[in-house]
Image (cartoon, rainbow, N blue to C red; front, side, top):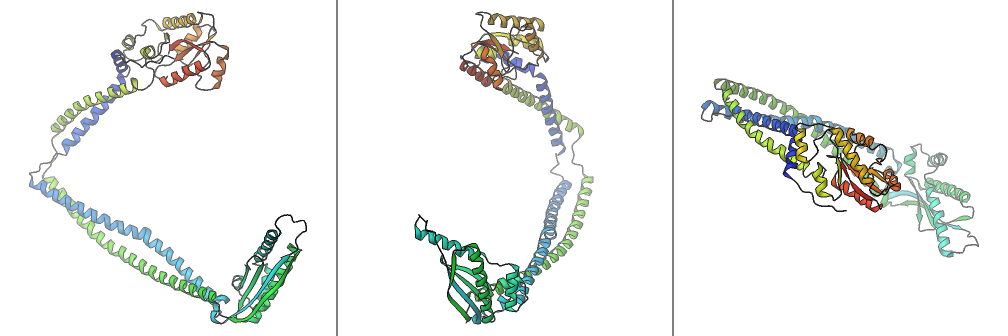
Length: 493
């Protein structure tokens, strides 16, 4: 593929400007109007700096801005307090009160919280688990047994908390009717290494705690025999009596500290909300005073403004508007022309026949007339080198050129490209071809057009002005060459 750099002719640039004349005019008018409006606005803002009254107005306005800023800050503080600080603190008070009440209720109702940790009744049973291993074990025997024992120990510890029936029996043994959650605090079932399980029950009376520990041991043993029939348990140590429970002592201190902290937070929140309400009340008084002062300053400004009108005359505003409008005409014209140049010349799209002829070595078999008519149509055609004959003659001639190029060696030829098949000029050309050549679509848009090329040896590209891009055409030509097809020429729509 011979892909040359495009050459830009002065006539092409001039033709692009003529085709975009409406865009250029509209853009120029808009920019000129904006500049003229700015000139009028600027003229209206001219002040007489030497005037004593005008100086007083400036001082009053500066004072007004200061008062309004102070008012804004006061309103901001009040709104923050009313909309955020007070609602948040009220919700926090409710939460802190609920937290303190729940912790206080726990200390009053929990058996665990009422037991003296320095003289704590305790009953513990430590037992080991064992199991019979199958004779068919082929892996490491010690590791296999360790895994089995670990699984059994885990099953023992996972049995807690127990069912409602078991917990009802525990409550009966402890002679208490407190909530189940307070009973569960008294019991601990934990694994010791990988083979031992320890049941711990704390209570005010160690004998009652021992009854519970024995009962729980029997329940675990019974359940374990159901789950693992080959397993067995053996008690290796027990304890019943009073002891010093440092873990319980730490828990008591931590919970009492948390209750004190909740009550402290509640008191702080109550102080905060009281201060917020006082802030809102004090700010409202200052806001009322500031509004009164602002009204007084505004009345003084209006009185001074009536004494001396600093707005310039309509004649001066008109002169300023015309001056800036003329500048806007030149700026708008330059801006519009720059946009047209960037869009048409540097935009990467095919705009006229010269773009094809100067960039590609394939013959240009025809340039079909555009369906949309523009101002200065004949002048644009002449500048771009297009034919000035009637549209019917141009389309017919292009069809004949296509047929002539395709009939040189008798090879099968078809049309492909990015052209719009709904274009009237392209439809007319296809009619003039009388079915001797078909348009197979855009090979970049899907696989169907590529499959349709299987029965053809050569192709003619049909590209569309202001739509087809150079990179797309290059891709088309590359694909055609990759498919071992030959490009006979190009038709520009």
